[in-house]
Image 1 (cartoon, rainbow, N blue to C red):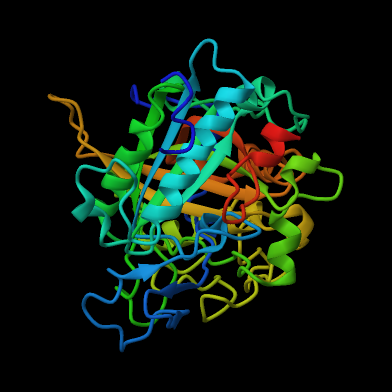
Image 2: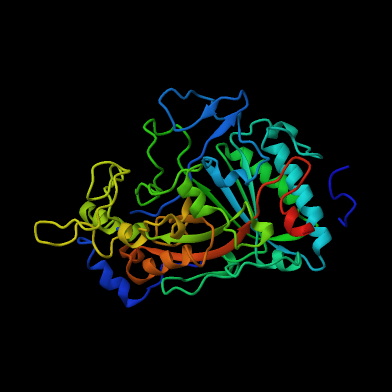
Length: 422
């Protein structure tokens, strides 16, 4: 018997924005880093070999049997290397689902995730062959405000919708949610199968609110290990702290003043950002690089030569003007203090344009961010971008959601146990 078996069973975002956008557009040739995304981690393959940065010696099929350990102090998806494909799914709780049934649900999901991430079929899986290629699968669970309220747990003050920003054109179809699943792997079939198993075991407890699917460069596709690129061609995620470092721990893990059930966990913000590629096409290379504040070929800051060179925000050109413009994305997003920074997790998305549309595509970025405290870290950075980021001319946030990410669990326990039994 499975755990819990005894329980009852974008509209077009590119509409004209504030006049500030037109002002900023005029400065494209004069004026910050790319969208940043994706914490880089390590994982064990099924033979026990340790994988770090990609190397030219990776061989075909190497990813298929890669296994990310499930049990631990933290949920593995926060620190593991992101897979090439991911599905972000938010759910709304059904009426009458209280604390006991939430616990039953989380036991089911934990059991599914613990098996599937190790390459084993979930119980009652009628397509068990599809589970045999784990491909670095991770399943991350998050709780929205509604979940924590029904669980009768202490709710962090930041677990609420973000403040309004002038650049936002948010749609309900991409925003909010009581619970979140992030399913990621290097094989799209693995993602699809794992997500189906998890959603089948969620039907008695919740309904789907939205699903957002994304992609990024697969492990080993760039032999030099360069950070992924978004669909503007920008190297995306350079400034992230590496898991296991003191800076990562400071930026990501819940602080001592967080609720006890969240210790060992973090928070996650997901923003769906539409990107206007059709008008971006009209900007020359100099304008693009000045908009970002980084070189397109290798992601180096305009003040450096290599991707991971430190931004020199004091550098000026021969005319005494800042090399990295005051409205460049790299400058606006830059934070030196790890306690005020965040770790990005980004995936590209691509939609078909509506019939009859002149747009070639509807493209964007699923911009995720891990941080200890949304109010103290994500919000100030977003306010800086909202005020004067030149990229706002070509980007529009159309979705927004905030979730608490509980800690990991030990074998025999389940995700969210401290919240649901505390």
